Length: 249
Image (cartoon, rainbow, N blue to C red):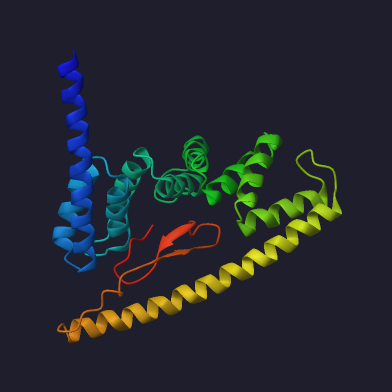
């Protein structure tokens, strides 16, 4: 029995190591626009259990980046990433089922995937889940919206302000609370706009550097790879990579 357990543990460790190694190989190939090797390495990583690799493959097929655009394949890999526990993929799949985008509308599937993401503190998922449940289960819906608002999602804060202003979901009217949430929403919306502007400026700088590198390869631009920024907006996700050749999700 001990030998079997040890063998199983070693097998899991080997798969994890393989997934990590292949992911880095695939990511570097993707940054270099070597899409054939990127897809090969990322597929190996995803099949070994790496959710981020599956998410990147989904993005490649969704955008036609290095492959022929294929919404069906994108969904297949997005579902794989969601099943492996990636909250961004879970949110996207949930929204697809909610809107009937590429799949039949299915409220149960939408709620399931949105809840999986919300339980991992994905604020956009918490907001969508809360809005879905607000009429049928107002207390639960309000709790999810409040979670998203507490995480700083300004659209959730706007919704919460409206609930207090109008006295909805079993909450009595409270003008002071409505004003507080409205003020916070305005502040966070402005912050989001400023961050997005900075991100776009950085993207321009990185793109210029990458073009310079392409045409003058004797110079190195090690800083021309992405940092991380924050997205804002209802369906844009929360965290997203910035920069040419970045990790997008």
